[in-house]
Image 1 (cartoon, protein in one colour):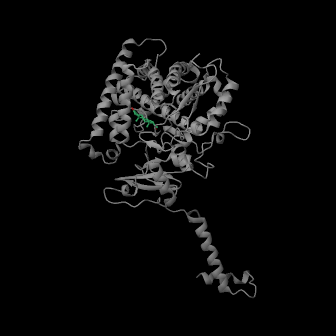
Image 2 (image 1 turned 30 degrees about the vertical axis):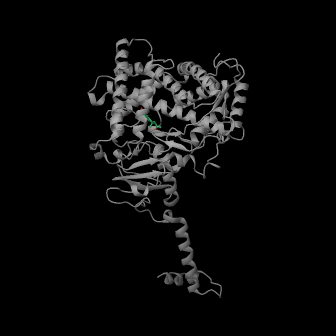
Length: 521
Ligand code: STR
């Protein structure tokens, strides 16, 4: 047929005498084959979208045997992306799951089609943690979730940028952190406990107006149960893939329940105290704001309105999310400053020029300290606290990169891969804050930088977190310098994956800067 077509065209095409029609047929065939192969599926007529490349699967186990090897999931997904492409599918036990390793697909799932993918799977451990999804981060999409999220967002903004509230709280906590670091750090010590305590203290003040002194028993209790939850949630893994496993007694699940009970006792007490002393004036803290907002949202049936349980779970989550993420990010940035003393010096030079040593740094200095902001961004890029985002679920039939995705599909966004994609980041393993500045020294935000996620599920605490990181880091570097103990190797850059990606314990020497020998003014 093809030969026939060419010969019927022959009268209109003049062949050089040396070219026979059969040679032309061959050449045309080769050209069209090459075009087909190069242009690939796009050149094909529109038809059903191609299925995603998928890992092999076994009955019951799904693709789990292909995921092991003792490698953390975000790194294993990177290896698999080299073989299967940047978006591929696998079966986590019975659950068909799509894994995304590239920022364009992440933007499609989180932003362009954000509504389609705003659902959350029901998981055993997080369901225990949140009384069946009465929180923000893990509960499934619903009108009530939207209302709840808006209330939390509005309550957070009472303490944010404009109010000066977060600034006061952080600065008073920084004074004691500095004193603690200077006391312990002159000879070299592990800063993790002091940093976590300071951040916990800030969150306690914001959530229920408690400020603790060093060694306070209630603060110790909060830190203890939080640590227990962090450790057991991270180990919850298989129960979340096979919910029926919860019928088997598990030490981790028992410990988790015990920690949740301690947490709930403490928070219920705080909630009752707040209810009893609630006044018409400005809210004192997050619990006040939630209680006031909850009454304002009207009296509807239980399943359509925000209940005490929601308030309690929000407070609990603000805690977990606020403490783990902020302290871990600060500890990672300190690790990188030990590796790159020149970066620390440059931040301190910027601070000396723009703020000086006469007064503490404040929120309005942020605009004048672009390099410090870049250091924070680079820290969040190179070691995202959440290397794989909390799973999303497709709430309707949808698509990713032109591939059909069915309702109910789980979607994992591998933020690690996106933040280390060599196509978008030159030398991704190098800590280089300058990538967030343009040629003229102005801040830029590359499209592949999504440390807080994006879209309807974007981190609700993002602006609080950014401000808090800024205030902590600027105050610390204004007042002290961090160096390695004499002769010590720089700390490991390898993280330990729990509920967030944490640095391994390390030792740092702390020296006061001129004018700050006592830690505070
Ligand atoms: C830490 C431990 C705890 O007490 C409570 C929570 C609930 C919220 C979680 C938090 C956890 C870990 C970090 C999370 C956060 C919600 C958003 C945040 C997962 C388990 C991230 O996505 C990094």
